[in-house]
Image (tube, rainbow, N blue to C red):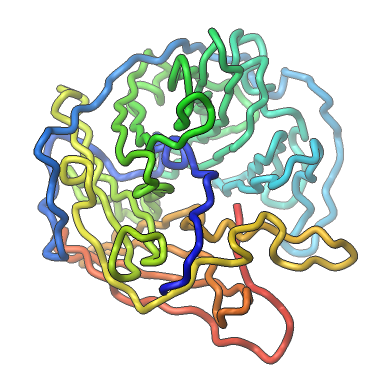
Length: 407
């Protein structure tokens, strides 16, 4: 929807920690066919991946033996409803997120995490996120950078946790990743430190946005605690044409519906025409194909530009001119941040056998008066041909409530 504004400068780095290593589509040498949706023209010069090994890795002692401000308590329960980790460090936004496994719920926020049984019994924590890297050494142990991600890999019955460490200077900027050695999140973890950059994040001299990096980590090696590699592509430029890409997260493996063999991992973002890059509101999609046998053969998108796009009904993503204080809260003048310039975590993928689906959502202005609503999209694929199946948002209700989702 056409509404003039300047796109907010805070952009997710690492494409929301990139392709991660769990819950994502398999990336083998075979590459799925491109869809029949509109294709973007590729740049003339071929986009090459940057391939590096982990800066460091090891296996931790069992997490239950790492005592760091651990409390022994039972969270109050109401059915399956119980209190999670509070905003202990007072970080805004707290980036609250977590995941459910067979027996446990693990929640990680800025800058603490805790582990419960599904019955709501606190098994471990809350403790600082750096506890995962206790005894590991380096920035992952000493710098509690936040922007956490927690996922349960149902196909491997393992846990994945990560956060950033950005001391800067000679120490550089790091992605810290931990993979549980078993299905028990209180046990030992394989720990990794991946150096993202020695000099900067996605901003030149810490100020000027320079584009987005998308990264795939070598999941098979990390599940075994072995030295692992990362494959990185850097796309976009200072214009902000690509700002916040979201990798898909595969579900349904326990039901026997894994992604098709050789399928690339779809990355997505929305593009409001008011950003000034596309003539209409749309969803952009890239295919991330990783060839671990020959990482130099890996590709991202159509030489860096989206493989396809899907035009949507007009929407307005500008809420409160992207102010962090937007959605009113009771008993305080400080509002909530809608993060309306990006899709919300997660992009849920499922293979139903006869078709694949990817479900997305973001926050939009439903009436042009900064009234927030949740807009959702369902993308479907048959024989790898993706299309926009349906999309919509709730009608404005005769009350003053705002609806939004934020990580």
